[in-house]
Image 1: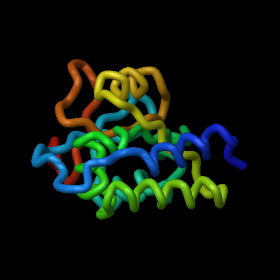
Image 2: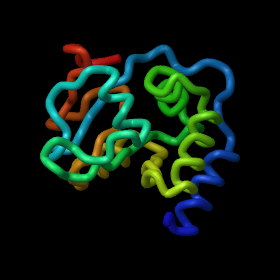
Image 3: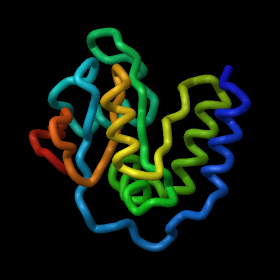
Length: 147
């Protein structure tokens, strides 16, 4: 059962301000911790992981999702390109999954630096940024460095 604080956090995120117009036009880069995630994935595999449908990596480590808040341009772009949802729809999707006990909520961040630091410290973590971090692990999606 998810913690009350986690549910409250998701509720605050889902009701917070977000950018309803267009997501930024920039590309997205999928990054991961050095342990857990494979070096390359197909887009369908990435979507399964990011939707909480795949909870473990091939090595058995737990998948830990890190996302930019939906109030950021990267968060809006991620919602559209990876989830095929609006930012609001994505927040509702995760709120329902967590409430049903089917998956742990993603970890949400205000800045790419915070997200990158979290991924570097967390085994099994995967996230989405605009630019590959210096020295970080970038996952190729369908053979490409960005979406």
